[in-house]
Image 1 (cartoon, helix red, strand yellow):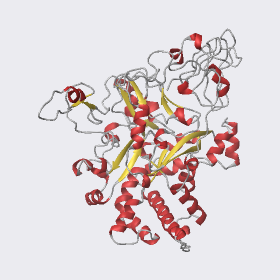
Image 2 (cartoon, helix red, strand yellow):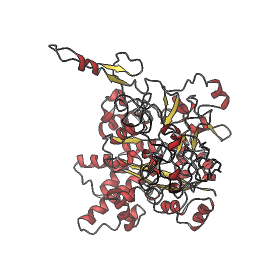
Image 3 (cartoon, one colour):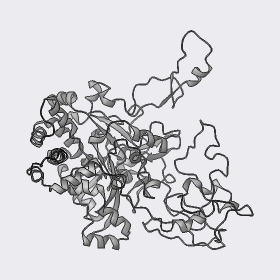
Image 4 (cartoon, one colour):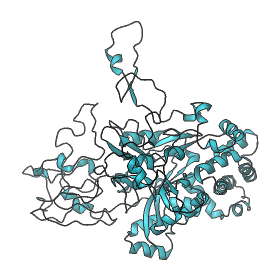
Length: 588
């Protein structure tokens, strides 16, 4: 058993209102740059629907994820190494602009500079790729609320697996929202597809990142990712993807999409898993067995043997405690109401979903039945095979049993808690019927319905024990040179994905300054200039200390006056830069 820790997310789909706040804030934080106009690290899809990009779930077309070969071993669905090498300069399995959409803006200058006329001037759409006039025909949320019509909704690959009668009834009665980010898989096929080895999974928290220095723009990762959550920046020639907001989670705060979620439907926590069991779990023969096999990979953080192995593996006590308090573990393992998205891709996804019960409740309400009664809800779940079959295709590779069990537990909680809130004695048969104790149902209700911020996001800090010791070595201020925040015209944007190098942010003689953009709000060293105009250093000799690394490390504080020093390793496993300013890790 090799214990590792992974930050995971669970989304409660019953609480998503389709407002796209998460998409907009993520866009403003990460992809508000040239070349990423069509890039949505977070997007919200309406189901049924084609998704974004169009029909991304059709792996017979896109060749994403893993498959078992004739010998029963995992291999990339896109083919062998030789096949991918032959296609490296002309990949036939890439989505095109038509599968995403051609990004556009509007000719606002025509509105501002138009002379007085009898008619209102028009701002025509302009392509951001060619600069020519264009016609808007598709977008990231074009089929929102089934707005694209039945002819487009019917192209949902999952609907093709249902009977014609089911499809017709489904389109008339069933709709829900599905927010999507990168799955940060335990067995990422994107990393295995990259010829340059630019995609890596961080050992300390499991976040999958792209090393922008190593990426050569082969775009094999786009084909390899079955969720199509890796995008190509045509201006930088690099691949980009959701970063799980690693600068935020490293200091213990949730991702931007979680922080701004109106419905409070997201939960973030730590999962401990057996890294040695991942390959075997992903290699089971039957796709319907992939969900229980992934459940078997997760370890019980309350088991003393698991705790001992985690400590031996170098996992800090804070992370072990966070795993024990994790809301994600409760929803996935304890209550077993959260399910993975498309486990049949064999990537072992780590963003799970609580399936929506609301479509079943809506049908009951429309027929005049009591939609809060446990018997009615259980009967409806068994009778309404339309939503159950579709959800099974989405979350359990077509296996209806886990979806039905999840919906029944949600229905039991709904009926049980109505009695509690009305001061009526709950039906004693409800809890045993779903194999839960009454106390567990109440705890599940508190977590899903009224959980506070600190209970929804249990995120341990990264290796910050050394951070304040290294703060005096952080260099540069973002306003020391031209081009800093607020120094450019409103329409000029930084085209870099990562933060600028600190040696570009300040001259060498001001190496005691603090970068205000990265300041944690606690230390004061270097904030104010000394009497001689240089930054104060708290008595530390900062000449020859290295700049902070551009990856997931920080500058090392072991340097002497000549700039010599050794690399050190942080508590969560990431390496820090040496005092010459060179980085030992990749730049995400």
